[in-house]
Length: 458
Image (cartoon, rainbow, N blue to C red; front, side, top):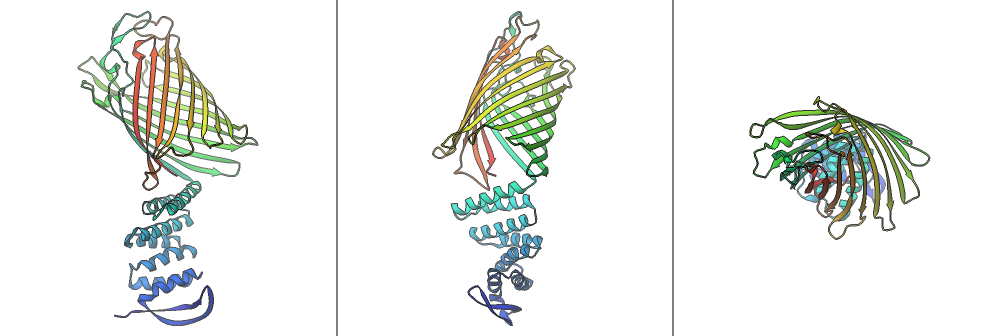
């Protein structure tokens, strides 16, 4: 049956309008006429013809594409999104899906549905026809992310480790002023796998040229699978951390200043009872944090930063009680002519606890270097440093003579694989190694882990 669509169409000569008339158009040609009207700059006419086609052919892809492009221009972004999503579903090739996904994302962005726009741009990335279009879509996605008041991240890592519990290297327990003994099995290093799931979301409450205020939430869950032949349940090393935060940033004449407040809850497991009859108890502590951060550009390539923070930790365990913590830090970051970045940090932490074993002073010196350009198929960032910790009144069975002193050296590497990506997500590898020497043997440890990570490009 030869259906026809009756509509007002324009006879076109190049891009100039030369005549207007009422005519009958065969249905097989009507979608092309609608597309021509859209290209000529008449979205109203294009939409009218396309809707007439869809009334008889609901899955006509060309008509759906015209509606997806024309409807948002006429103030009906929802209709554009629906048509674009349907066009994506009926597309027969990656090139067609790419076109439909981008139009759907554009309709969502025009309606300020930025999270939905990001979703469709991710779908477009999975079917981008070439590297030029992929980069174009990546840039669009980054622009949408800047406009979006919501910012959400999800990450997962799975890592083998020779020390999933932070245990000691040797079974002997030695400390100045204490008798020599044997550490329990859970206090010694245990090999296994550590999985970490992290989620965070932030919402921009206010933004102007001078300031920005955001509220956020974060969750981090850690699960362990023990591979050593040892009679300790995996859940003994489970932990969960959640927090809500408020942050205000303000631009100054020279640099920025930000204020932050955080309320967190850390839940962990603790083994109780004699060996062979141990049970896992749930423990937790509340965390309250306040902090100030200041960034001060010294020149176009160098930024100096300062931070001061105050924390209050309230442990459920009455034997620990409260811990008050003050943190002071400074850092320097410089961008080199190659656009590589080099930086260094100094951090001082002072802890005062109701329990003497939670009273300490820490000094950490660290540095890092990140290459701007890929090194062959990878991106690379390296870091490392030293930490000195002093517990002046540490106590085991007896007071430790002279207190406890730990010396830690650590190093890390972040390796990215930019050539491997899907929907804007790229895999990476995080390698961490540290060595701690202590006058209390329980804290002599060497830890090495390699984590597979997934990160977003926008």
